[in-house]
Length: 368
Image (tube, rainbow, N blue to C red; front, side, top):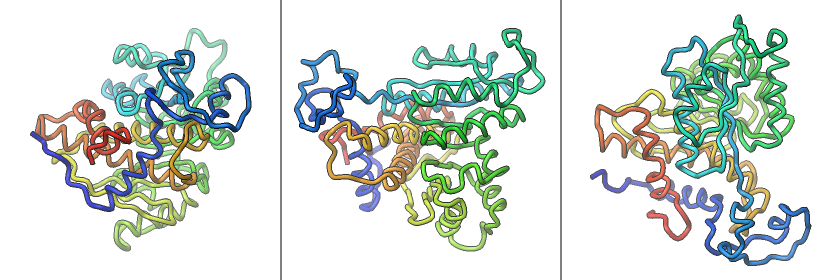
C-alpha cells in the first residue's frame, strides 16, 4: 500500500485554492444565467439554479476545453511518438477536458492515432527536406503555420514541445504559431524541444504572462545561461525567480527534487514527495496536467459557474502550475509504490485520476 501523501499546511492551503478553479460536476450546479444563455446567444445577468439531469441539451455545459500539442515523428526515434500521447492522455484522465488535439507530421499521425480513440490527430505539421504528395507546393513555415493558426479561436490552451524535435522547419513553424497564440491570448505550456524556441529567442515569450515553462535541470541551465543568470549564484528559488523576472513575468516551473514555481514576483515551492525513480516522459504528465488546469482557468475567468470569490488571472496561472506539479509528483509516488524500479512514464500517467482525486478532487470529495 502506498499510503496517504504527506502534505504540509502551506501546500494543503494552496491546493484548496486550486480546487476553487475546478468546474463543478453535472448533478446540481448554480450557473450564471448569462453563461448558460451564452450558448444560445442570449444575454442576461440573473443567476439561476439548473438541475443538470433535467437539462440534457446543456449537459455538455460550457466547459469544452481543447488542448493543442505540436510535434512531429518523421525520422524521429520511435519512442518520441508516445510523448504527445502521454501529455494528451494525462489531460483526459485527470480532468476530462472534452477534447485533446494532437497536431503532428503525417507519418507520425497514423502511429499516434493507434494509442487512443480519445485523441483527435491532425497531420498538419511538416519537416524539412521531405516530400509530401498531397501538398501542391513545398512547405514553408508560414504556409504550415497558417493551417494551425486557423484552429486557435477554437482552442483554449496550447502544449508545445513533447516529441517536437529540433527540425528547422518545425521550429520555425512553432515560432509563428507562438506569435499568433500571443496575439489571440491563448495560454501556452512549453516543455522539452519547445523550450529550445525560448533559448534561441527569448523575445518570443518575454512579458507574456500566459506562458508556463517547465524546464528540467539541464533545460533550466541553458535558459538561465541565455539570460545571463548564474544558476550557482544563489538559492534555487532565488535563481528561478530571477529567470522568470528576466523573462518579464513568465511562469517557470523548475523541476527537481522539489519544484520551484515563480513568475518573477512570487515564488512557490511544491515539495510533495515523489517516486524514487525519475522516468523519462514524466514531464509530459506535468504538461498535460498544467494544460488542463489552464483550460479550467479560462472557464473560471469567463464566469461559467458561480465561483467562490474572485481570483485574478496571475494567481490562477500560478495555481494551475502548482496544481500540475503536485499531481505529477503524487503520480510518481503512487507509481513507484506499485512497480518500483520497473516504473515507466505510462505508469506515472496511469495514476493521474487517483492523484487528482486525492489532492484536488471535487469540493465535497477531496481527501485532504
